Image (cartoon, rainbow, N blue to C red; front, top):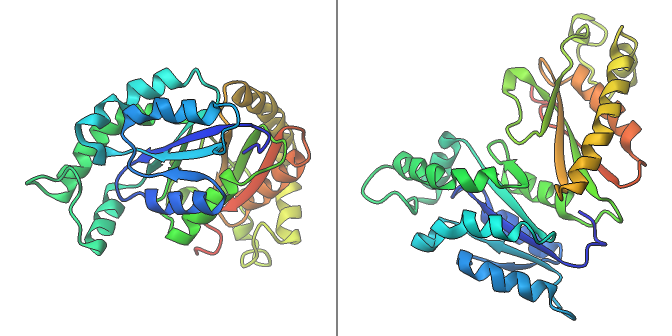
Length: 290
């Protein structure tokens, strides 16, 4: 995120059990002033405080969630109202039902909306209440596959200062057989290229190894795909900046996330790094999973 922005207000919300506390702690470590369990109605004065001349709190994160009870019902309308203020963004944390259930069972705590029902009943109620807020989010992070350390690292990658970058992008490789990343803004498919897995001398190597990378990029259509993909991303990222969407996840998948997608992501990253207004981080989600 650009450190040149004089003021920044981040609304952190999402599913209970998806990692809000971890995100809050990581933001504090980055120097953000974090307010936990803020009633949505307090967001307006918080934004006013952030933009007040001489404010000592230029980077503020407010954790807002269903713990606010009936007050939470106003959150979507308040966010829609505040979107006219360029400094306000929304981070939404997501995870699958099965993972949320496991996390609640591990800490032996009921879901805040569970009432007399089951954990899944509470999660279902929360998803319904969160639907409109999720649609308004600038950044969605799916924490299903994350432990707390991986989530903290992701927050650092997304929200640490990146000089004068207007947009920070995470380029992510993945394997389709493990599922597409739920938080990706753009997904491309590298399975049109021959799989190095079927080359005995390349099978145990990865797309980060020169032999695999050279093999992938030498295939018919590989470099043309790379060039067209980068050319497509440039106007898209400029549009994101104009719309105040400051982070995007761009994913390329292959079968297992080991060879083709890894090589292409690293190659695309090399072509995007150094472009004005863009900061690039790379994540190989499924590398080493096999």
